[in-house]
Image (tube, rainbow, N blue to C red):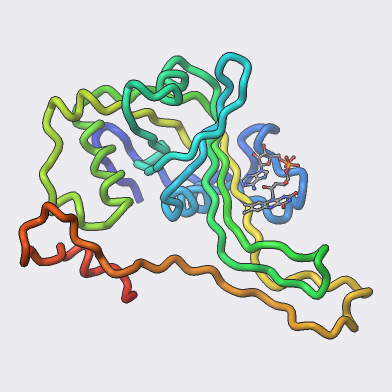
Length: 230
Ligand SMILES: Cc1cc2nc3c(=O)[nH]c(=O)nc-3n(C[C@H](O)[C@H](O)[C@H](O)COP(=O)(O)OP(=O)(O)OC[C@H]3O[C@@H](n4cnc5c(N)ncnc54)[C@H](O)[C@@H]3O)c2cc1C
């Protein structure tokens, strides 16, 4: 399958081995995945990613919205942002997306853990400058927040597109790590008489709160109404 948005083409090629030694899992390697589908799924589920980079010798790790279009992870923001300035200048970066799926509650404190999926992408970000690609990126961000929202709202003007910095990171040198399943029970814990198991973590939406400047009686948008039952 391939999908074209702007000038980007999504290739569903599969990485079955780490692209480089830098993204080869050494700790718990059985939890590692290198195929694009696994990395993409995590990037697509995570609303927020953390971007790590070094600026003037100091490491920073900045949370930010992220989206994906085809082979690229996207971040966006204001040109005044140190993060975006530094990354635009070619600082090597590490983007991490994390999903927490369940509390892993063992019989001993030591074995407590969390079920998770996380993805790491290494590389250098590039500025997206072509207006149609920028529009596609803004659409991806809006649809990531809430599917269907893009068509309901005013589209960005040329001036707004110009004021928005969008950077993209090729999903090439990447890894995913997944922990799932019950807690581990070493032999010395087998007789410990306490409940153990997994408590799934779910994201739920609350009731929509209408903005104070919206005209009274304006119905909630279909995209909002379609959100899973609260
Ligand atoms: C929500 C959450 C909670 C965690 N809690 C803990 C904790 O309390 N203690 C702990 O030790 N570890 C925890 N981990 C696992 C942690 O992320 C590391 O995988 C682990 O600490 C090993 O780090 P390392 O640098 O030795 O990895 P290495 O295996 O040496 O890393 C080599 C390469 O493997 C890849 N890699 C490593 N970890 C990840 C990852 N999580 N996702 C994607 N790619 C990865 C990267 O490309 C990295 O460059 C947690 C992970 C998540 C997502």
